[in-house]
Amino acid sequence: MVDNITAYTTDAQIRQPSRKITFAPPPIRPWSSTYLYLLSAVFYLVSICSALLGISYIYCPSQYIPFTEPICQDDHYKYLIPLLVPVISWFAIANWVGWEYFKYS
Image (cartoon, rainbow, N blue to C red; front, side, top):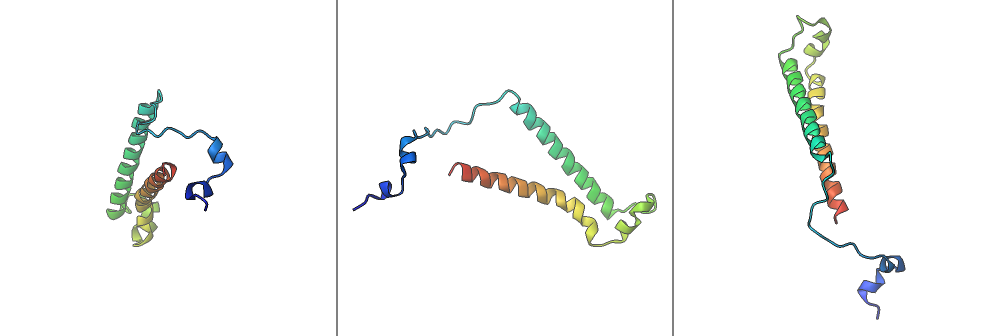
């Protein structure tokens, strides 16, 4: 009778040394915190600009800016751009979390 463990392993898997499993975080790179702060600032600015763009669509300044008249009269597609920013952000975050689960499974 074949053992279940040996039935699913190959010679290449047996020859490779196994990685040590630790719960320690990866080492910090020299610019990690700077990149994190810059990325946080970019996300903050994008969210503020998206909120301001959404407010400008609700209180549409069509009498001040003439090329926004078709956007101000539209009731459906004018919310596409302000809502696209948070949807794309949440989609990217969900994919990143899923990739992390996949990577460490």
